[in-house]
Image (cartoon, rainbow, N blue to C red; front, top):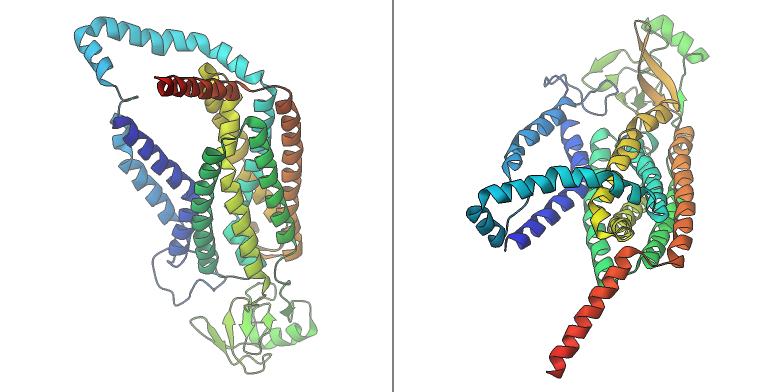
Length: 433
């Protein structure tokens, strides 16, 4: 009973771990509607000056950390009745043997186990491939909502809600399918690698298609150097280089309300705009409504769904290439490498790439601030070309692992065959009796 509950709890935690990015996008959508100082200034999230209450996310993380403190009081492992009885009868002897097992024996065996793990070429190749993939994928996920805002001209609220819904559905479905496929088909390591290659090829195709999807670069009327703007500056007396885009009632974008000749402003609406037919404008870029958004969401859903299907086969490859005594070390070392070289540096590296696509920077007292306008075409190349390149390199590595796996059976596959033979033999004896 205890073991069943432990496995159910483990599955529950694992599912929530995979749903984490989707839930984070949902939280981002909520806080993006709240002003950073919690004061209503008469503007909304479409205003270029809008800053959402980003700090609320850190409060949620801190509160979750406090709620998780009771987990620290759980025992390291659940004890069966035999062990508890032995501990009650011979407490001193049990304590000595347990300490010997946890401290001396395990520490002494750790270097040898780690050396055995590092000598396995299939494990190392798969780990390198997974690290490259994680570096690319987590880098994209860190800026996925921002990418939708820039490339498809969505508001922060719409971008975060879109990512939340798509990520939650695709992650939950993919995890279920991956576990079902791996358990029902009983695949060996070479077949698991073949499945992984198929999955990676599908995701690569989705990324290539996504590279060509996106809205056109917004055309800004009356830029600072135009003759129309110079005539308006004489009337408006405003800074000619300050970027503050507005969408005119004529459906055109203007560099700022000053460049549109607007003289009155109430909340997020401008009026008496001499350069605009109709004389009115609202803050922000006009919504293009380009139809490729739905195609991009479909490609993202397919890629995320298929990538989560790949989680269980990847896990099985990593453990079936090791002997039983080295599996824990292999998984621990793999988690360390993935976190240190994949998960942690990804946002910083992709952040640098995204910054290079900036066309107009905000400057305050001579100091560079945030980016105000991006080159959409350049941003798409900077985001998806590294993704495509990383996936091609990972596929090449997995092909090498597939060739090596075909030459000899892996320890996990040998053990599974022995167990299957033992069960078949026992069933035969039972039938004959």
